[in-house]
Image (cartoon, rainbow, N blue to C red; front, side, top):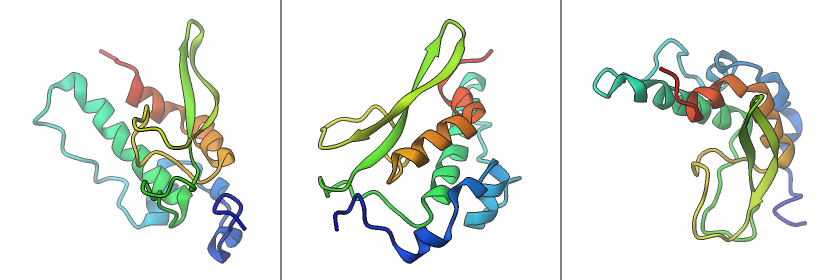
Length: 137
């Protein structure tokens, strides 16, 4: 059985779609959702993306349910959503697997072990991605 198809007993018991909000993710990983990073020391226009990055890391941690990417393992697939800013707004395009590239277009913590999870996160947590990627004054 390959790393791609291997599932642990924990994976079979946990339905990642039960994580529907940042608060759900915090509850799963044991973090207080009211305690966000202190960003008072950085410029105001950079505060929102830093907090959104933190939220996305918590969301991925909860949905990954103990799975952690091994960046030294080229045989372990790592999926992340491909998002686009369109004239009609912010949208989800598809999910990609990052296989043995020397660079990345997404934060290394923001990946999953399945395309389905990556697509779910992109669709369910669109607001967090908007806060992370888009500038708002």
